Image (tube, rainbow, N blue to C red; front, side, top):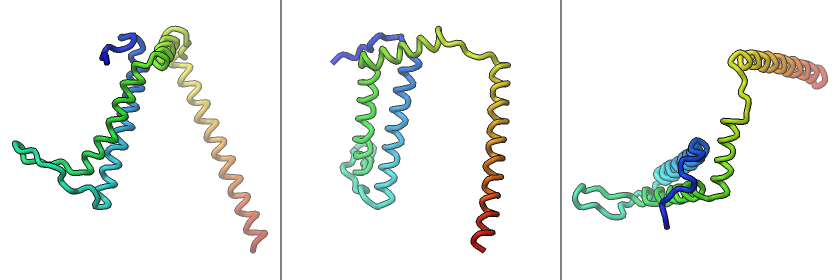
Length: 141
């Protein structure tokens, strides 16, 4: 098994984002499982003790590491799988070279339109809710 990266140096941001997401999801799963075991009082037995530092990992710690390993292996595999990597490389290239990004002024103007639209829709929902509450109080009382 070679540790050479597929198309090294290409698509670093997109591939790095995928690796970071898998790492964070794996870390969340690992911590959640460890806390679940600790909260239920399971897996708190010391499996073995390291003689020099007098520390022993608990069973919940070892299970948590076993849950984290597939995320690391999967991240490495996805990072180097040609089909996934080529897609991410092409996506990053297209975002950098073919997409026309809006200017700051256009972004501010469009954001104002979105905020105003959200306020109008929120107002309409509040009015409809009040109307239905009034109608309900008339019909059922």
